[in-house]
Image (cartoon, rainbow, N blue to C red):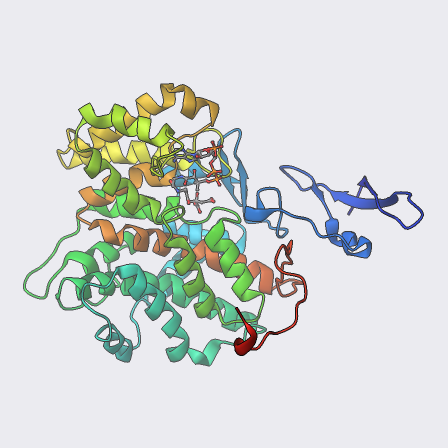
Length: 434
Ligand code: SDX
């Protein structure tokens, strides 16, 4: 509860005095205190915060980020420890249930997820409605939303069991739909999921196997895929998670909410950045061109930004980028690609940027998207599939936030505005207009 109060002095009372308004201040377990501004409406004022730079939209126990110290905790566990010692499905369990599973709980959760990876066979027909050259994110927006047209037996969001079934179905089926979007784009047959493979291994098998011959997934690649999903699993109230929460606040079904999150993630300022980083590195093409692109990124008149750099919250290293860079090193070395030209350009670009006054002053560091694309490319995944991978990895985070909101007290999200349009004016018939 409130243990401190903020005092607001509001000018403009009829008698020329100021209205004194006390607003409660709440403290969390970690991070900044918050001022509860709900009492402001009595004064007739709104708060104004485009982009929600200084706004806490909700209370949450799932993920904590300290942008100045480069800290990321999932239910209190540091991302570095989870990346090193846990795995993706265990992290999914942690995000959903709040604690690490016991051995039995872990086994049961993994078995349940891996035995629900098939989709309703009729959903396969949906893909043929898309052009083969559609962006796979466009396909994912469609087919994930369509899950509510096939699994409407468990859409009562007031029913805890239904909420859990939806969570499991989404985590299980996202990789299958993602791989199908890729296979459809290259005209190859869909590959059914395999229950005997790991989550990451099954995804790579569905992506690259064909009916013509056995496809063996290299363990190091399956592990790298699992690590990439894990590093994308959740990230507090980012744009796509906030979209899922806002959609969910109207009572929309979870499949529709996740489809809304996928749409928000697609933008190049958000999850679309990993694809944009690869496009940028290919455009730079050679280490000799790096200085030219650094200059473009600093030029206010040039819309070019260094993709994969900067973050709304991190004003220090994105801890995920550090782990991703280390994974990049491991995978490329394992594959004998340590001299990968794009990786060389990326490492040199990072070194130059981090020594440049502009980036230092604006606290622009590599974010999660800067190195992920290089690993994904090394795994054989095409650039336009990168954000689909991000969406697949982020599904447990989106679901955990949706579930946290729906399981508690919530109201429909309905922000207000600062109106600067026309005052009331009367209609003029077209015959009387100049
Ligand atoms: C993700 O929120 C999350 O947690 C997201 C995410 C998650 O896991 O969900 O972490 C995933 O989206 C990572 C971010 C991926 N996006 C990119 O890499 C795209 C490139 N980065 C930027 O577009 C930008 O840094 C954002 C969008 C990430 C952050 O934007 P902000 O917080 O609104 O910051 P801003 O645009 O106001 O920039 C502040 C200043 C500006 O200069 P001034 O107007 O003050 O002079 O820094 C400059 C910007 O021009 N700047 C950059 C830059 N990013 C910011 N200049 C050059 N290159 C960049 N990349």
